[in-house]
Length: 111
Length: 115
Image 1 (cartoon, rainbow over the protein chains, first blue to last red):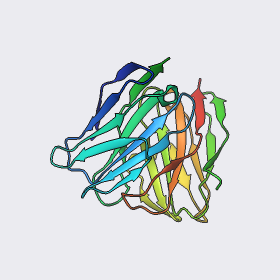
Image 2: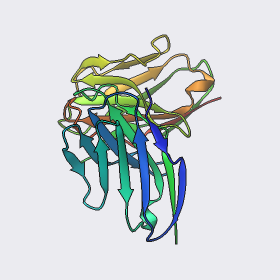
Image 3: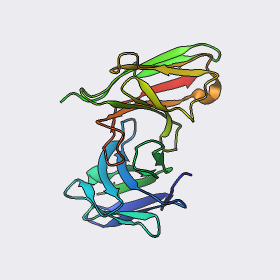
Image 4: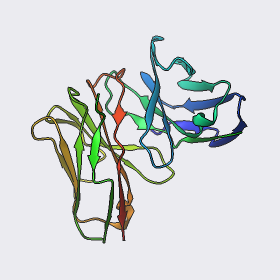
């Protein structure tokens, strides 16, 4: 079951904040966040695990509500380099098998 | 540390032709994944290897797609015969293990256009 991401697209000015949401209808073990720029490979941002463990970049924060099967990615004081498409990938078990990605949120940061 | 390598970067073929993609994962990574990413969509897992064994190939169209990782290092994904709907970017990724908490590192992808 593919996770649902919202919004589909967002346009910001440099310095503004943004929140990207990811929700699943199934119980989750992990949520993985990636950013992909046009024509490039997805780049790892963060992993959130059931139980509260997080691994990721210092300047990016995220939350994982296990009961609601939802995760949110928080981008504060946006920079031009934050532009790209953000994907969440959800894992339903303790294995990385069947990591299912959402359809993405396109973020554009304007000067 | 070298990243995930893929070749070729671009390929244009006609429908019904065959094509093969190559992937070399990060050194020491036991798990290798092949994803298909259609324009405007997120990556879709095709097959996952743990060393040289298949962990999951439930979404691989086995009538036309095949993949192997014979020595547990590099891998080849083949399409034969190709259809128009196979036009996509084929991404290879690797991780240390199959643990749900492991980061998957992606290669640059192979962009396939089927005419």
